[in-house]
Length: 113
Length: 115
Image (cartoon, rainbow over all chains, first blue to last red; front, side):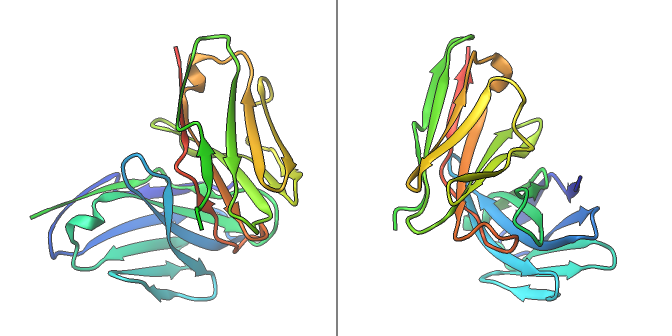
């Protein structure tokens, strides 16, 4: 089945700096990609959905890039602020109605002043 | 919109006891997913319902775990004869129709501790 490798597991970022999280997936049939943010004691908050046909997506304070050739998905936090401190997960899913999401192991981001 | 509701938020059981976890999906959503989250294994897919029908239970342990969706407003995950290794956060998510690109919205989870 699909496997998703996420790195790094931990990221310490100075406020105002940028940070990059990378996920590598194995199954070329993966079609939809998602980024979620989890704050302590909370569920997963959807940050962005990425279609396999779209390479660059911009959100509020972050950019997501999809490189289908290398089967990589990246989340770039731009100008990090304390509210960005959380665990971030990438997730992939096939283009069908079967199965659930396959998640990376997560990246714990800590933003310091 | 209240989002996905999960009850209880915390549950402590003794080894061998039964645990039932409840999930209320977002109103109007027809798909419900269950996941388990542990430090070691991360987030694992367990099972999925669409229009109350079981679609995929490939992630469910073969023994002691069962899930149901008796009506469109709630789903339950039952663990019989709980074991310490069942300790985890169990997350429920719902989506509009369950399709591959349909975003899943997660509840806060139920933290299960088996002593």
